[in-house]
Amino acid sequence: GRLEGPLAFGAVATAEGGQITLEQLLIRTGRSVLQSQAEVAGEEQITGDLQLSPLSWRDIAAYTDLPLEQDLDARLSLSGSLNSLRAGLELRAEGLELLGMEAGVTLGAQPSLHQFTLTLRNLDGPLLSGDPGMPEIARLDFTGAGEIIFEQYEEGLFEGELTLGDVT
Image 1 (cartoon, rainbow, N blue to C red):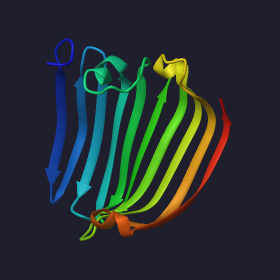
Image 2 (cartoon, one colour):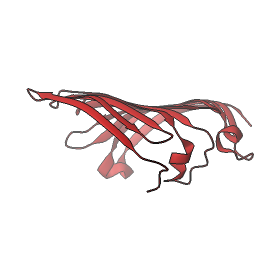
Image 3 (tube, rainbow, N blue to C red):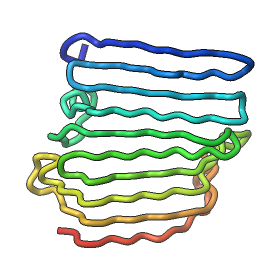
Image 4 (cartoon, rainbow, N blue to C red):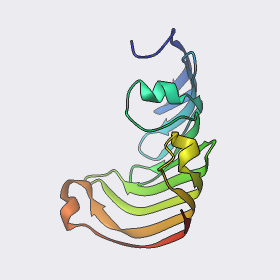
């Protein structure tokens, strides 16, 4: 395989009365650790949290060409229902104080995006990537709202505000 060393896996889950709970999922490579928990109660309520800490840049390099030379701490979260779901992602690393994204989506008959937020704090591109030509960005914020139906994204309407500060 692409990963060095064995993969360890463990899970604990329960199901009762239409509710499924993943109490814990643990996946460990020689360099990365994934922990997760989730709960689904029909279509009414979905909650979940997935953490990769650390997520080795070497494990990432085995599958992508992303220019990384630092391990990441990553967190993915879900909450809500199929009619109103919030999905969030947070990345942190040496050279990256925070890259956060949050999306509000509807997964019903016409799956769509209705809200998106992006936050970037203190990106040291050369340190994170090992490439001295990468930028340094102290602050980037984007907040937007509208409706983009995934199957008809060309017709979507979305507007937002972008703030950028201290780029070198």
